[in-house]
Length: 392
Ligand SMILES: Cc1cc2nc3c(=O)[nH]c(=O)nc-3n(C[C@H](O)[C@H](O)[C@H](O)COP(=O)(O)OP(=O)(O)OC[C@H]3O[C@@H](n4cnc5c(N)ncnc54)[C@H](O)[C@@H]3O)c2cc1C
Image (cartoon, rainbow, N blue to C red; front, side, top):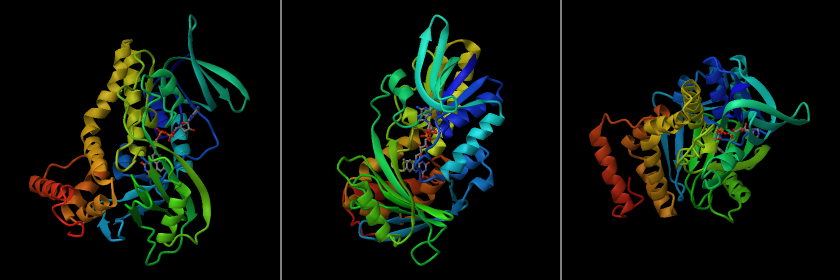
C-alpha cells in the first residue's frame, strides 16, 4: 500500500515524488518512457535555487533577450544580475526522476490506464513496460502529473476535459557558430503575425543545439511552414535538423485541482502555464511541491478538503503575475500593429527591468512606484493608439 501514487514523471510529478519521499512517505512514481518532452527548456534562476538544480544541468546561460517586431525592428534587453538558463529535457527530466528515486520513491516505467475503487481499496492500473502486462498499485492518494491533455484530469476532475490550449511546435537544430545573426548567449523572441498570429516564435540556444519554434491557438496554421519561415528569417535554414516535435501548452489554470476525495492534479495537467510566455517548467515544479504539501496534510489529518491547499497556496503566490501576463497577452498578441507597439514598449528601460525581475524572481517588484506609473501611462497610450508604434 502506497501513501501516494504519482502518475507522470515530468518536472511536476518528479518534484512531488521527491518531496513526499524526503518527508518519509511511501510513494510510487509511474512514467511512460520513450518520448522527450517537446520544450524550449528555458528556466529562471529562481527555479535553480528553489529546487537545487546542479550547474551542469544548465547547458546555456542567456544574457540578452532580443525582441523582434513584425517590421523586423529589434530591441536587445540585457539580463542584468542573472541569466535565463537552458536545460535539455531528456537529461533534465531523468535527473529529476533519479533524484526522487534516490530519495526513496519507487519508480515504475509504464503507461497509466485507470483508477479503480472497490471494497478492497483504491488501485492505480498501468501497463508495466518491462513486464509487458497490467499492474495495479494500491494507494491512499493519487497525484495526476501526466501533462497537458492529462488522462487523470479528464477522468477524475470536473473541467479536466475543457482546458484551452495553444499548440507549440519546434525544431531542434545543430547550433551554428557565433555570428552577427546567431549568439549562443542570446535568445530571440519574435512577435510577427506571419510566424504566429496569436503567440510568438523563438530561437533558444542550447550549447551544441538550439530550439527554434512557435505556438498558436488558431486552427489551420501550418506550424512547420511558420517554423521554416522563422528559420529562414533568422539565418538558420541551413543548419542540420536534429528533431521536429510539437505538443499542447495549456492556457489557463483549472478552477479545481482535486476531485474532493483522493486525486489532485499538478503542472500542465492542472492547466498551469504562465499566459503570454508559455513558461511552464518552474510552475510545474511549484505545482508538484504544493501537491506534495497538500497530500501530506491530507494523509496526516484524514481530511479530503486539505487537498484544496495546493491550489490556494499556488494562487496566493502567483495569481497576480498570471493576471498581468494574461492581460498583456490579450492586449498585445492581437495584431501586428499591437505587436509593433509591444516591442516599442520594450525599449523602455523600466519595462525591461520590471519584466526580467518578474521573470527571474517570480515577483512583481513594487520598489519603484513612479516607474510603474510611467509604464502604465505608456501602456495606455499604446493601447489607445495615441502614440505611434514607432515611437520609443
Ligand atoms: C514546444 C514547447 C516549448 C516549451 N518551452 C518552454 C520553455 O522554454 N520554458 C518553460 O518553462 N516551459 C516551456 N514549455 C512548457 C513546459 O514544457 C511544460 O509546462 C512542462 O513540461 C510541464 O511539466 P509537467 O511535469 O506538468 O508535464 P510534462 O513535462 O508534460 O510531464 C508529464 C509526464 O507524464 C508522463 N505521462 C503522460 N501521460 C502518461 C501516462 N498515461 N502514463 C504514464 N506517464 C505519462 C510523460 O511521459 C511525462 O514525463 C514548452 C512547451 C512546449 C510544448
